[in-house]
Length: 122
Image (cartoon, rainbow, N blue to C red; front, side, top):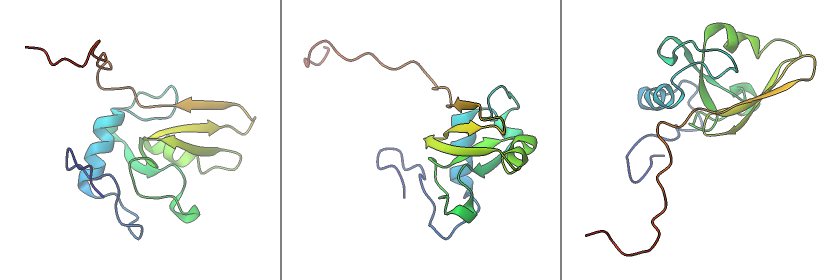
């Protein structure tokens, strides 16, 4: 599935485990670094991983995939750790002690202000 305005790949077929190259590029550009809270390893050196695991029917799409360094990719699979997607690459991580942390990719730019009226500028 692609975004109609940009042509960017948003979702691979449900039977695809590995992210296609265009989806991997989108995720690395969006995330810019490992999405685990407090980690700043650049996304270009991270892995593209499912937040909800493939084995638990996690989709291969931009909502459920994110950039994660090797250490944090393996950590969330350890007993007591869990991760839930919040959409568009964001996730909530729960540690074995029950603490939760939410990580969301930073926007690439500030939101554009809404026009005050509907008159086009000339």
